[in-house]
Amino acid sequence: MHSIKHYAVDFTGRGSEYFRIWIVNIALSIITLGIYSAWAKVRTMRWFYGHTFLDNHSFSYLATPMQILKGRLIAATLLILYVGTSKFAPLVSTLIIVAIGIASPWIIVAALRFGARQSAYRGLRFNFTGTVGEAAKVYLLMPVLTIITFGLALPYVAYTQLKFLATHYAYGTTTTSYSGSSKPFWKLYLFTLAFLAVVWGMIGALIYAYMVTHPALSPETHKQMIGLAISVGLLAFYITIPIAVAIIKTQTINLFYNHLHLEDVRFHSTQRVRDVLWIYATNLLLIMITFGVYIPFASVRLARYRSLHLEIIAANLDEFAVQSFATTTAVGSEISDLFDMDIGVA
Image 1 (cartoon, one colour):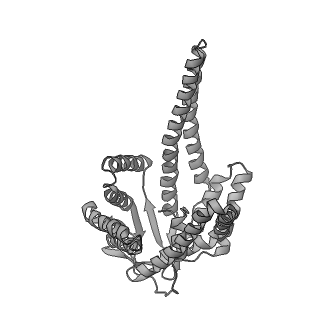
Image 2 (cartoon, helix red, strand yellow):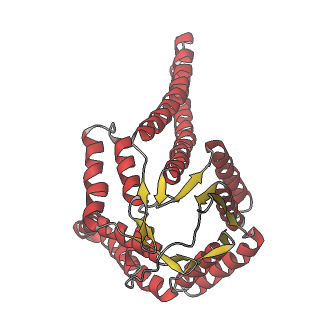
Image 3 (tube, rainbow, N blue to C red):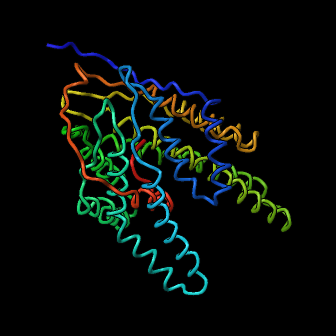
């Protein structure tokens, strides 16, 4: 009987190395009017995968630039049609958005399946087995529940969407399962809501207190105070919303991995909100200071943090059967990227 081992995920990439790839990708994409971006994506993905190691074996990204380019051209055509008709034929542009919305379950499944099947470890491909019907229920019908409950069902909807992802990935012939419940999601979203309520409540209380203690303000001063209150409110909104998103995303990643099973293989994620907020804030500051030059270093920094806080717990990583998959296209993946559909976990 094999003893249980803890396998660390090791990311060995360096920012200076990725910077050279990144700057060349940008230059060639500009020169070729975006055509090289497909090759740039594959080159980037292969670099990140190739520098991510588990048990001294790196991951592999198997997609070809032509697969990406074909999908990207179809996605770009849809975007051009939408933008081109938005002023001259609003009805057509509306129909395009509606069509994409209706097709979103297929787009989501196709994107997840393509991303999984083009990823491999030790010669075995990953897969995503979710169906369009299941995606329609989770991503189209469940959000309606959020609307009719005025947002109260949001934690449960988030749980069902994460469970859909967690129960349909596969490595070889082995499919993942998920043992988590919806309870932690309720706690997470209530905590985040309480955080927003406290911050915004304190700001509102301070403004109200000032107005009450200074009742004899002149009309001009009163207008200035209203303007200041609006400015402070907007500033608080733009600061606290990213913090709230980081709280939810970080804890969701932990909930995803810590309850994910691949038969006897377990996962352990230990990301901390304060660490992620610090990385996001300092990355943003350094990107602004360097006028974007720090972007590749920021990407590497985040990838390294994520790998440092994820480990695999298993007796043996070799006992998985090989399974071949049919060829997939990148259309769904590129449409989801171009129209900013937020799918997946991390």
